[in-house]
Image (cartoon, rainbow, N blue to C red; front, side, top):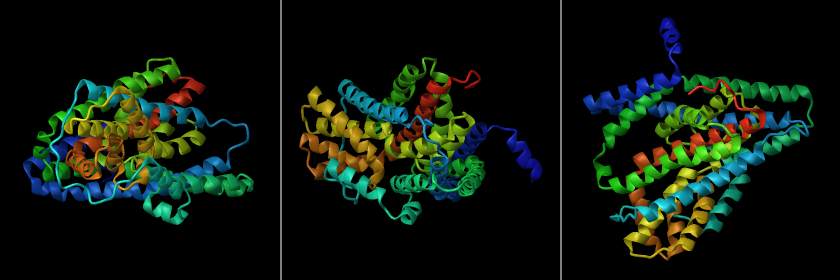
Length: 407
């Protein structure tokens, strides 16, 4: 067994994940029953990541802020700017693509049971309430807004503590980081289980009828990932952005695609940030914050689905209204984590801009759940990989681009 682990450690994690991906596809196609049984591996892997991530974020932020010295920059202001401009440009891209390739929907009746928010004020109110959630409840439920709020306050309070106390907090965060690294080493097995289960249970039949809609959604996300984001990064670092872009997509986007959870991918991004030599005081805050508010993929989904609903009902949308939709989608996407169901349940909010009734809008949400196997996976991959991409770009703009960054 020891020899097996030594042999596996000689293979890079990304290559192990690719092997796990291929095995999952082959097994599920050869025997769907075995594929469904392998789903336990995926459940354990994602469950472990989701379970440890809130603790990791909580103690990392406390340790980072408590040891922060006055006058020491964390670069958070620049990262927040990149998060906002990236999400807005994603929404604007979705508007332009929707105008070039207008899409209509075949509405369904089996929409989600959950209640969608009634307006942007409700979304932002939910976020503010989550900030003051009970800290233990926030950790138990994965409420990262609450975790960010309380860990920041505790970290600020501990800045006046003695060095021994600060060292204890740092040791705890380091210990949890090691546990996370152990969990991440099981990613190939977890992803094998996730892929096998998805193909065995869902297949692709349900997606064929929505091929055009999926193509526009996924095409927009790929365009943002491979064109818009590199332009933003280039403007920041004044260097070829693609080595960094590809590295983030490869090492963060792939795992996020299969886990379909920005929260579960926080430890993966933390590990990549550490290997990129980014300031821990910066990434320990920016990564979990990005998983909460940096939602370019969600903005694309909200915008395209809302415009598709308008086209289905023959509602003419002019450019000023579409531009306003981009702003609403940006604000709504930032609040997606505070609403049960994420970006899909913010579609009715965007549809209300065109006077579309909630009944019809919730049917559009139902369509979203049908294509969610690919839409949500790609959306999460874009969201999560952009968290580490913009964090790294902002850091490299200040400290210098690493010449040895490999693709």
